[in-house]
Length: 308
Ligand code: PMP
Image 1 (cartoon, rainbow, N blue to C red):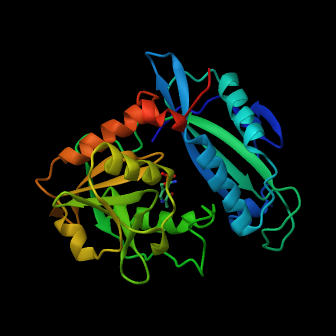
Image 2 (cartoon, protein in one colour):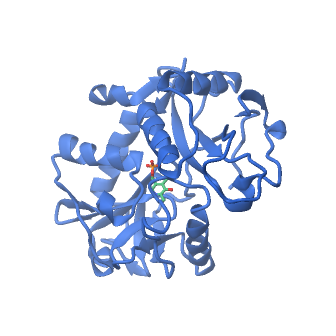
C-alpha cells in the first residue's frame, strides 16, 4: 500500500517535518513494543468543503483508557487533544480523506521492559487513505491458525503496539495462503475479530457480532454500526458469541474498522458467503455510515468534529 504521508508530524511536544520525527533505537517502544495507539479518520465533505473528524471524543476516551490499562502517562485533556490534532491537520493543509495515527510510546532508553517509564511521548502522523482494502468485490478471508490472546495474557482493549505482532502473524499467514485477511478465534474457540477490524454477520434478518467480553477491541466503528442497524434500519443486533461453523452460513458478513470502514466478506475458508456478492444490508449500513461520518445525517452530527 502506498499512501501519501503528509509532510508534518508531531513528536516530543512539537510539530516537525516527518523526516525529523525519529525515535532512538534503544527506545522501549522499539525494543519491547511498549506503547499504545489509535487511528482516527477524517472524512472530507466536498459539498461542505470541510473535514470531519469521526468520533473524536470516543477516540480520546479509548486512548486515555489504553494508557490507564497499561500504566503509561497520558497527560492531555480532550480540549488540548482536539487542538493538537486540528493544528496538525491545518499545518498539513488536509483537504481529503485522512487517517491519523496517534501513538503513545515509550521513548525511555533504559533496558528494563516496563510501562511506567518517565517521559512517555505522543507521536502523530497522518496519511491520505480512501480504502484500506483494495477491493470493490469483497474479501476472501480465512480462519487463522493463530489464536487471539486472552485478556490475562495481553490486553487487546489497550491497543498496545507490541500486541500487533499477533495480528502480524495471522495476517502474514493469511496472505501467504492466498487470503485477504485472517479471522481470529479466541481461546474458547469462538469467533473474535480480524487482524485490525471487528466482524459482523447477518442471518435471517438478524445481525450478529461478538460481545466485548470475547477479547475484541471495542471498535469505534463497531459502536457506530450497531446503532445504525438498530435505530435507522430497525434490524436487531445480537452481541453474542458464535462458532466457526456459523461463520460459513451467514447470509452476509463484513468487517468494521477505522481503516477498513465497512468491508464486505465474500468467502471464508473458500466457502462462499450468501450469493458471493456484496450483501444488500451491508451496502445499506455502509452507506449510512458514510453519510454519518461526513456529517450528512442530522441525528449523528454529534459524531463529527469539523476542522475548518
Ligand atoms: N479490532 C482490532 C484488532 C483493531 O486493530 C481495530 C482497528 N482499530 C478494530 C478492531 C476496529 O476498531 P475501530 O473501529 O475503533 O477502528
